[in-house]
Length: 332
Length: 243
Ligand SMILES: Nc1ncnc2c1ncn2[C@@H]1O[C@H](COP(=O)(O)OP(=O)(O)OP(=O)(O)O)[C@@H](O)[C@H]1O
Ligand SMILES: [Mg+2]
Image (cartoon, rainbow over all chains, first blue to last red):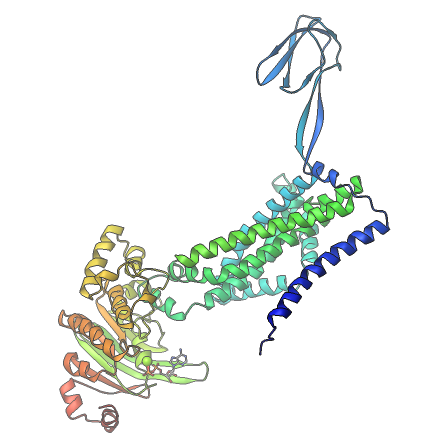
């Protein structure tokens, strides 16, 4: 029996919700004022885009021969003592410090301009997106094959898939990341170094760890999705002469996909959050980038809140995409 | 055309059951054979063995001289020649009526889209639902769905059609329209094996009737013999119960 509330009670508790939220925020602000934390929200944007001054320096001794400006940029040409010419580009908006016929020596600043660079948080977020995307794609592929293998008639395929799922689901992700990283760097990288001549960067061990982890869960999601489709569908497809693979591809998978999508979305949202663990193997993803930013700025409160907000944006975007896909599949 | 020799089938789960015991039968090209018998007597199992949806444990099943139980046989090739219609239709709900019929023509028969479309239009007209080509199966009545299922099987140009209680899931007023399609097929000379409780259909269309009980074929004969003076007591008992 569901709890019944009167209209008045509902209004009261709706108000209570906002009061509780505001009280929590207010309490937090009050607490920070007690410890005289000084807020520096203004530093946060500099961790998204930082600009720095680039100096254009002369590389030879001589005199400034000409300064030509076109719409896009200016070109400073210096004539050397020995008669050689060198020219330097300065983007428009740059500040010209040398004039024509000026004497210059190597190292003199001819001009300076401002350059925009992605900041630490921006770079970290790009790494998080990149790592998550790769891991999602590999995880889907692993999961589809795993799910099909889990219910295959072939015992080798079935048991391999089962072993994979149990191994991955039964151990902490953190430990798996360590295993991939340390076994990766000592074993695989040394073998690669010996026989092929290059090494795999740490980031890729992180991607593999996340992909293998996600693949195991996707395997179970795909398996239950396939099993939720009435067996009569397979029989109808096979009785028409379709192969096992064709019936999976044209009949079972398209129908299973609708049931697979919602739990899959949850899995991928977990994946984005779990990628924050990769900081421990020196992958500078969003969380690690935030920690680095904190050590240089002392704006720890602002940066960690920003970091959390960025994760929220990523996960929320993903769940919107999946909702869109679901709606599109529902109507077709 | 179909030659079944000494077939046994045993199910182990949930408990051991011998569904077929020493079943032998011979079905000629163009013949219509109706299989009757009490529930659980092995009719469906027998039918499903004929296109290898169930694997018989012993014996031989020859379709046009090719043994289904020989591991070297390409079962997908045989199945394309043996159409099957199920009690529960088993249409593909994510595809329109037209797509249901086109799909296997494309991926199994490798027909071009236009060729497959043409064939689909002809078949839909044959089963009397040409105006429903773009509709999804759940929007059709049971009788219409079953006629689409028949058209889907016919699209492969099979040599044999198997029917497992095609009218048992239908409301009474829709049984006739499905039986009419089947009668037309029989008249055109299709080889058919039909499991059904429709004794009127058996009497009118069948060349022979097979009576099964407890996993065995008890009696085989033409319908006039069958319904007027069956030779076995069990057949008499069964016919008394249902007629
Ligand atoms: N997939 C299966 N697994 C286990 N036992 C099965 C399976 N299919 C059929 N059986 C059993 O085999 C026996 C024969 O079943 P079958 O479906 O062939 O009977 P039937 O004559 O078609 O009955 P009905 O008229 O109810 O459809 C029954 O005892 C049934 O329980
Ligand atoms: Mg049956």
